[in-house]
Each structure stands twice: as C-alpha cells, then as structure tokens.
Length: 92
Image 1 (cartoon, rainbow, N blue to C red):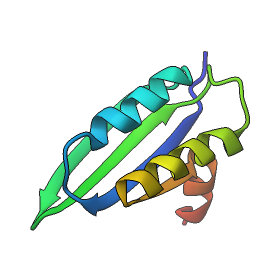
Image 2: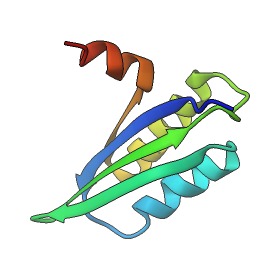
Image 3: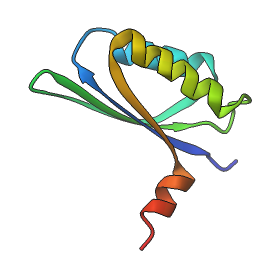
Image 4: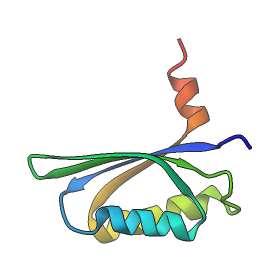
C-alpha cells in the first residue's frame, strides 16, 4: 500500500515530555512515525516528524485540533503539512 505522508514541525522551549505527548497522540490515532529528527538549540527544542496517515480514518481537522491542544498545553508551535502541499510548493 502506498504511504500518505504528512510533515510535522515542532518548535518551543525545551521541556520534558514533548516527544512523548506527540508520539502518544499519534499512536492513539493509528498514525505511524516514519522518521523523526530532534535537536535542542540554545534551550529551544526543534523536531521534525514524517508520519504516515494512510491508516488514519478520521478528518485532518481532528489531527490538527488534537495537535493544537498539545501546542497550547505545552506552549509549542506545531505545523502540519501534507506531502502533496510540500511537493507542490517545492516543485521547480
């Protein structure tokens, strides 16, 4: 089966539990993490995730809404971008 990929970008002050909160949320929605990178720069946490939503059977609004709740609770900035949008924006 073909994957349906979404990019997640997370930025905020470094604190415990960021990766756990996001990965647990994705797990509960049956979303697989395909790739993850994270780094702390001068006290700021920066993470990118590439996730596969092909087995996710709900609206993207539920995904972005749930991530929005994590964003507010943990004082983060979370950006969600579907692979199709990313590819269209970066087409030469």
